[in-house]
Length: 462
Ligand code: FAD
Image (cartoon, rainbow, N blue to C red):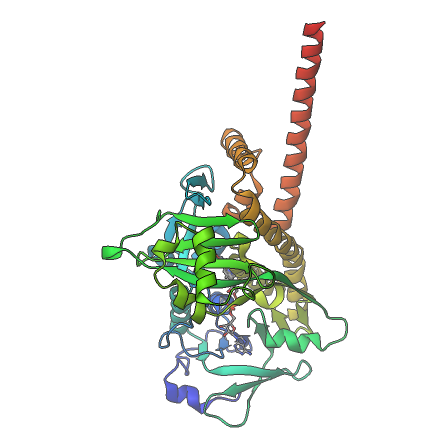
């Protein structure tokens, strides 16, 4: 294994104090985002040595990049994985429970829709930066883990296993021989890029036609929350939508989802006056709470919304993909990170089950995950339409109330799809199948009910 002088100079946790299992070759993880760091903790706790490479600076020392989603909704799947490495309680200490959605109508009326049947079925608003820092700190404390920041992966040879990194301050690329490499390098993964060059690798990316921009509602005097604290706020406006999640300091991070082109879009409305007018027309109750709107709009980047699918997720028993690198989804179910965390525990179990036969372990991992992540990708796009269009409709509200009623009445039999996704660990594809079965049964029962009523009326009349 070649080493990098700069890391030692930077004072990263470079020399591992003790190596858990010297007989096992180290696993190389590329990307210390949410999935890569959690996987590092999980693998190190299972007795693997792990070398983690990240192109950015060490988050324990650097500031957060502006405009990357500031907070995230954490739910049962993600919490379960964090619990397995003993980090769930630390994360929950600073998380804000959100019990439901507050819908902001055009005329300023508010309506609360609970997420689940009781106070245990809540989502948690967590800071991306704090969570990432906590995971990096946890990884750095584990024996056998070495962290290499400011190392961008620029190449990977699938035949030899040699990965190339361009490291800040070093002219020539650093060559690192690897035995098992995990590509956890996010939606525009360099490792996936290498796999794509191989024959038989399927890949698709679908842009949504909408982009997103982060805006802010600062805290009121004394750190007061200026909207309901324990809720996710939604301003559904048909073609566009804004949401807001609470932060610990009393502020809310808003995300505007807007068409990229067309009459009311990122492309069409660019100057302060037209943007201001659009916001006053569509988000009238939020505008007085957003004193930095014009500045945020100008400075914060517009992000793309993309679904990525590929197959296989692994090659040669040498490289495997994880998280957004193999299954980026649009964020309308708040599941991208949760699903990526779920990947980590499944991959660990497959490695434990198949020992040194990495090829078999990766095949099993893909078998267990791929169908589910495909289902999630579809559900996320469908939920976008629900969130921006339907949540405000009285029929939608009625249907939701009926679902909550049935769930409370018959919790073992009827579980709404949203509840299965957010508050259980039922595999996504199975949840979708079960929801379809439930809906068919309810429609059947309702049809029979109305038929009986109809026949009874006919008999009574004559
Ligand atoms: P990332 O977190 O993107 O990490 C990838 C890492 O790899 C980064 O640190 C990057 O710097 C590094 N990297 C990239 N290229 C290289 C390279 N060549 N060499 C070395 N390092 C490299 N999910 C939820 O569960 N709940 C939510 O509420 C939610 N909200 C979202 C809101 C928005 C607007 C968006 C865009 C996404 C949201 N997501 C949410 C999805 C979530 O952000 C992702 O699914 C999650 O970050 C995936 O984790 P990851 O580790 O796979 O990728």
